[in-house]
Image 1 (spheres, rainbow, N blue to C red):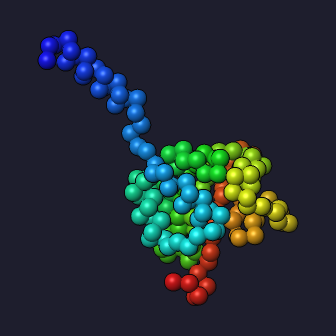
Image 2 (image 1 turned 45 degrees about the horizontal axis):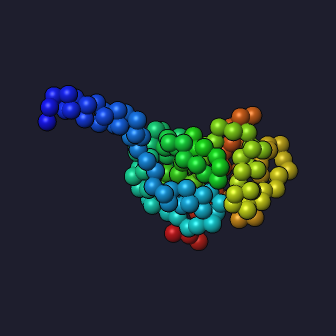
Length: 158
């Protein structure tokens, strides 16, 4: 191969490597996570920890009884995931959730339109929205929403 062709080929390879994402979420990622967030699936802490480690790398922190992972901008019912989380084994809850940098009204609208999940606002001092299946939306600020499904270990679940 002539030096000019070799240089061109190397330059193309470098350009491709810099333009291609260094990670790609599997095509099933959104479906699996959306089903869990909508409380439409069963799960185990160990399964989700393994799944998130495989596709999102190591947790970025452990806080509030959960392991938190970078969301890699996963699209979940039309919302970009900032971070996702799963409970720690000792927390006493089965919980999968996501933090979204959008107001709760926009997140709610996207989920209702795309997944057919309907939320009702709960009475009380803190705004919360609950679906019939137990999925929860909580505004953490004016521009950020937490969407999760939680089930507490009441002795009737493994």
